[in-house]
Image (cartoon, one colour):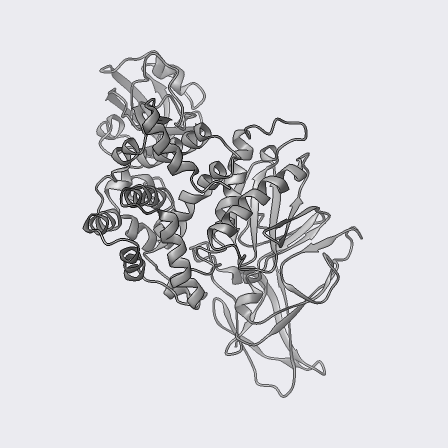
Length: 569
């Protein structure tokens, strides 16, 4: 029996990789054909044979993402979950794979992977080996004429390969990544859990994403996110700052999910969904630490970090679903709700990334009130579970917290944070920690928060998000119980006129600027191909945009800087 995974670890959605397999056939060592029968969508049964069995098949590879496989004349990239058939019952046996230089491409093509070479030169084509199928699929492969830069972090070799046209300063990228990697290695005890590490970075016009592996990460970014030679290194631009945060996030996963992991994932069952309620810890706490390491290592300033944190909180406040779904439920239902978003997702779903990070922030500040830190807790979990080869359940994580400090208030906080939809006490805790919190109205679709507002007056609120539509502004999201919903508008409606004037996504905010809170506004739209006319009463916009700053009081500033910088290397 042969089978191919239906999902890839780290991306919790059934992706049916077998749909890209074609021309699958089998034969004996002497070339005699062997009957192959499809058992289900991702399994094949071969007729019994004596001796070796050869299976040939093709895989369609045109997904330029970090999850699957892509091949053209410029590069090749794949995850083993998209390509390598497993032999049922033999998944724990050692395997080898030969990577051959593709025909018709440049002789300068090289290979970048952390698979163990068996008969292959450094960065070259040849034979590689893995101790099991699980290991085989956890080392993605990049092939092509990539750029390469190498560095060491705490004595462990690291490398960055960059595929795609760019003018980035890779030496600066390596210097900055070295600081992040060394800080995280020291955070978890000073010894990297891998013999070497690889950052695989695909550069495109517009893109963003990452996926963690045991000794590498696959990353996708916009070419403008890379730093340019000669740019000031005092503060990275927004794009580069985001790229560093993404690298920090995926690197932290080398500990938190690849080795410290849910017991349910030991081992992974790659043929069906595996629902865990713990993604708030593995993704959320990782999201708390990713940007925190940027400020701890001095790559960004405290003010820059507070801007990022303010944007993070803004995303949380702009999610009505935080009052509908707990972060534990969000983790459990990631497969069908978070990873399969639609126009109603913001109203019914809370992000385990965003809220999980705020749970981590609140827990950190609460622990500090008891003379401890979240750092201690994470390090304790690493030693108690990961280094012992143990997976965790929720009760294990809570028991480990009790071993740091026994405090009923902490237990009560965790129960409410994980299993209730009441707002987290992030604002009070941050103010106690020396951070001033200001909430204001958003100033348009491009206002991500984190900075003071620039408008003297706020835009009246309709309670919708819009995007470009055919002949107008198409509504992509309607806020529950907002003016638009009360007027009968829905996601998908295409608004063609607002207050008697033609409108579209480009002039939407300009049209709203002409109006005031309390105005009764005529709205003309199409729902599919049917005409719709209604009236909306504009209201005050919600105060859902967060701005953070260090407190003016010197004593409070010391408290805040100790929180943000006390692990600085």
